[in-house]
Image (cartoon, rainbow, N blue to C red; front, side, top):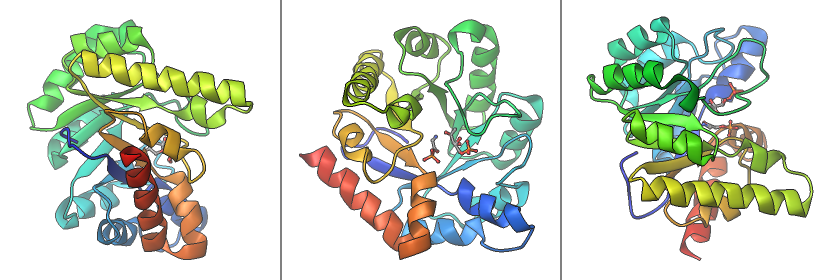
Length: 247
Ligand SMILES: CC(=O)[C@@H](O)[C@H](O)COP(=O)(O)O
Ligand SMILES: NCC(=O)COP(=O)(O)O
């Protein structure tokens, strides 16, 4: 996710695996989705190997490591099990995320400021394998400044609050929070990515924020793919974000 002069689309394929997991079948295969996404213009593939293995499995990550033409963004909790697995697969990018067993999805950002020593040690260890480490955090100056202090080159701002905002006022407030976070992160010299809960009707305003390097999008793509196919879902999203970023 090294800074580019155009906005990048990272396609998260977790929820292809959610559908597979619902029936314990071999299909749909997230690896096939990743290859289709790449053909349709994805700049990278994001997978979150959760501790409870509710969607992506080790097998998916190992196969992806061999077949991806772009690059893998491996999302993981800060646990010894995941650190050891990451050291084995050496993904191009690693995003450290908070994880709790019972959550429906990743509900907030990683509390970097509250556990600087632990996150710094993880960033140092994972940087040694050549991965670019990013921290999935709320758009909050305290967390962004802490991310810089622990030595992460990149952050991903959690856009869930923006996506969940209901009134126009709330939407505007949350969008401003994200835009301010992007500006603050860039001023700190960080690569700034964003994602979570973005879909075809809310993505443009985020893509239009100057300086965002990459948007990671998954759930909405998989949902739209049911109706138009995975390649079309990805290419439609890519066209939307490129147009919004240029405007
Ligand atoms: C960290 C993040 O935002 C994504 O990994 C997302 O969380 C994937 O979906 P689930 O949270 O539903 O596993
Ligand atoms: N890090 C966010 C991500 O990968 C995608 O989140 P979502 O679009 O599935 O909500």
